[in-house]
Image (cartoon, rainbow, N blue to C red; front, side):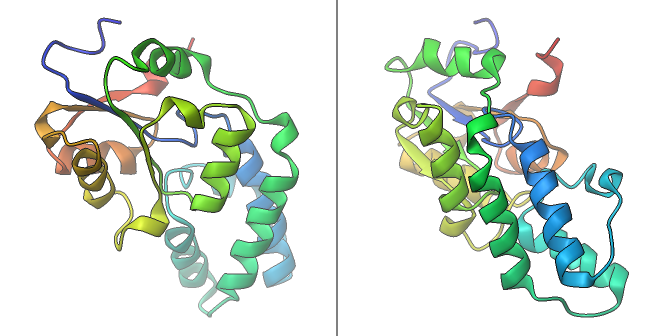
Amino acid sequence: MSLVRAGTRGLIFDCDGTLVDSLPLYREGWLAALEDAIGQGVPPEWFHGHGGMSEHMVLDIVEQRLGRVVDRDGIISSARASMLRKLHVLREITVVTDIARAYHGRLPMAVASNGSRQVVSACLGHLGLEKLFDVIITIDDVNHPKPAPDMFLLAARSLACLPATCLVFEDSPEGMQAATRAGMAHVDVNTLQG
């Protein structure tokens, strides 16, 4: 566990793409919801690079490209429902969850995700991971999603840790930027996976 340096007082983990392999499920749900809402197919590769964004950030891009407003609530509701229906195929990312298990009870730990509480709680609960964490912060708890530092700063406060003593595990550019802005060291989990 040499990734966690001496002096680290708290660990903060992203959820989607870091703890759980949920991005393919999100992609399917979003592509179907967008097709239903805008009346045309969206190429699957369009979703690439949007995995770390909040739902409204993705919809900002959709509206900009379409040049019109879309039914945001309907699209979000449909995409989330699709995701929740497919939890039975959800898998954990063991290279990261093994780290969380190793530090459970040794260091305070949080989840900080741009996902909704509804989906994050369902994913962690389905895989039995929620018990590893002292606090779960989602997009529902802050005004500004990643890449803003708000979520990580709230997680540090909730763990009673100074930001500089926290280590963040992330998979997205937005998340790593947020960690840097929060004054926290981070691990790019993409470098840990085979």
